Amino acid sequence: MAYWLMKSEPDEVSIDDVLAAPDRTVAWFGVRNYQARNFMRDAMREGDLVLFYHSSCAEPGIAGIVEVCSNAYPDATQFDPASPYYDPKATREQPRWISVDVRAVRKTALLSLKELRTIPELAGMRLLAKGSRLSVMPVEPHEWHAIDALLGR
Image (cartoon, rainbow, N blue to C red; front, side, top):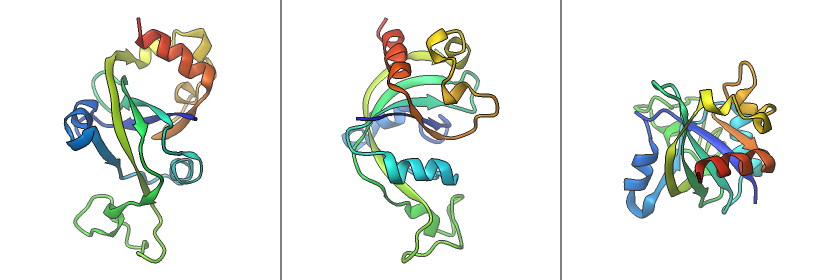
């Protein structure tokens, strides 16, 4: 099993939206960064656990835990001209972007970005690196366990 952090703007998809979805499952769509896409396509697997991170909001932070419940598949939004995620260079024969499905495990008390920065075990975490903007990133096991301990308090 691997561990991940995935960012979503809560006005697009929040942890509450995942909890309210049928089977508590949603497609993770709209990733348009090659490195983030490659993580999803090449390394993410069913059963991996994910820190669900609310970004671009008043108080960014970890809002819950979800589980990857599908392997990667073509993101349908890349083919839809009405979608803000439309990519005219993508074709069904040669899709450029992928999605995975995630299932809610649990909502947590918000663990803010500000608080994450105070935890010594997280000093090397990708999320906290200067200029980090990836929406999908791996989380090291020791980082996961430190965060999970805080979320379980």
